[in-house]
Image: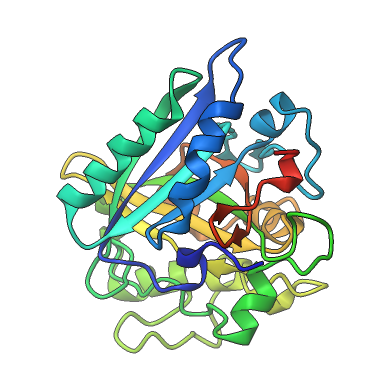
Length: 292
């Protein structure tokens, strides 16, 4: 089995993320089965939330709902959905057509609860201007970080994804001088080099993957989103086990040592979800882990 194609591929120029809830009393099997072949294409990732697995009376090893996390003056909410779909491409019209086709094929049992249009910014930077995903593992290390190795039916080649939508207050961030902005991130914007003596609140210190025990390596595929009025980062992190992300989130909230990530001074999470991304077979999604 192999992972869904976009997981290990660099992000495209733009994308759309769809989150669906289940309608009360709906049977999701027909909609999910109709989606099976759609995932054989190279532009889509399908993620199954715990509510959908529960409705199918399936227990996917390692899948659970996203936890609401609160720290000192900061909170990361849970808005767990039943189904998460990420579509990427280079043409906004083509991506929209694809999204509408998928929504139609899912049928009335799934209710669209969230749509986020994303885009690549200045060659892979966050809207703050800093490079995003600098510490991403590559090649074999990316596979090791993000892809499940298992002999269980429907699990080998799968991945889990943690997603959050962040809303930035760029005016507040840009009110700092360059040194202050660098200190929040923990890198110099001009060179992208990590600052050796960055404060403990710096994001690179709070999220350093190798600093956890065991190491919490993740494959990030985040992209900016938004308009003039509201904007931020759609955080996407593929992992072979959700504990890796959860440890990082707890540290960002200060639950580990009382030190809160400086990112929270100018950005806030407004959504959060965990999803299981089944592997591919020759003709589409391998849904055996969901008893389909």
